[in-house]
Image 1 (cartoon, rainbow, N blue to C red):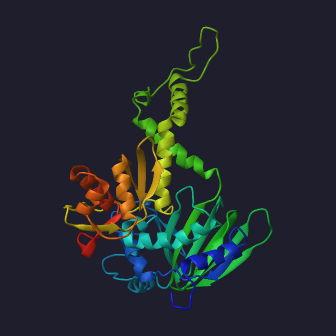
Image 2 (image 1 turned 90 degrees about the vertical axis):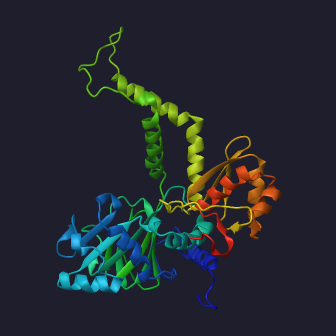
Image 3 (image 1 turned 135 degrees about the horizontal axis):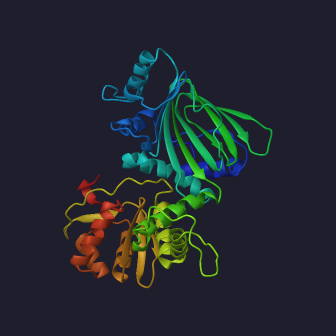
Length: 396
């Protein structure tokens, strides 16, 4: 960003006022990311073994999606995006192709943090996403994204063109209008929920797309997954028979009910849904999501380092706090949570908010926490990148 260009917050405020929740639009909005920067994450996502669950998709303009792209994916002999594109041009005899990777950002904390900072400006202007958002990186060359418009348009989308050019055809719900938007390097494509779309990647195109669920029904999958995980951990759920008698036996009154394991599962599901522990878990997951700006999965915590009273530390991320009962709280930073209790950790948090580097010994005296409880707390904060060691010691 040059000295005459508005800061990110101002740019997002202007974007929200002009376009948010309205019609699709293509606007200049350079994200500060380059194709070389994202290529490393794409290549890492394609490293063997590549499984369908990773979200890696490869298609050619002539044959469609390939289930086993093999040597057509980035490899050791492709040091950068240009080398990779040149190799595919030779192997495919100039035929178009498209490589996309869903949710790759967790592999590189630096890139993940840059994208998080990018979208935070928009969330501050329009509100924070309640559910995880999907990030997708794509490299394409004269190829459409799919054979037909994407179904189930229950999300809004933001697509930055990091290099090259692309066009998108859009069909908003409940209207007969068709849009065709074009974008080149440094442009942002936006469309609200309710739009089917068809991408066309043109010459040497690299994109970053953020897709955000925008309808209440999307929460069902998230809550159902959480309850299913808790049910699997419950002893009452284990040991159900694999076969059941048919017809099922009737009760004394002659009425035939649902099979026992099914009705038992329904009761367990309802009980867990109403359990206070479920509400606590949902609150904690929201705190983690808020600290990640919705970009899940977050990069894993980094390894711990030895901490001593003479080391100096300072805050490196905002600590989001949510109450978790009397004297207890959940802190969140960079998509991870830390459970704390008592007044001592809150005094540490207040001291860290000053952004002044302090020794661990000074933090202990100021918070009146003994080293035996302070060091584990600071170690946890270090691992989730909420604090850094000054002078670069252990920084990563």
